[in-house]
Image (cartoon, one colour):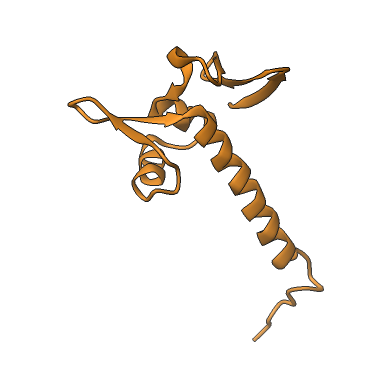
Length: 103
């Protein structure tokens, strides 16, 4: 579960049982496992988000380990809330907006 807290000058994100402080070099980046846990999705889904460019990430080192900046994860979550809100507004839920088609 991911949770964002504001502590005045800095922003703190709770991911995988740890607090991640934006701007602190040792806690700036998340593994794909961290991201998967924060979004409650599979590792494969997280990898797909990164490979398609939907969630910006970088590859580190000779083994090509993926890392997602905590701020990029928060920006992604914010974008998804906006897209979801747009979807909900343009696709109302209810009988009056989508009458049942009976053959």
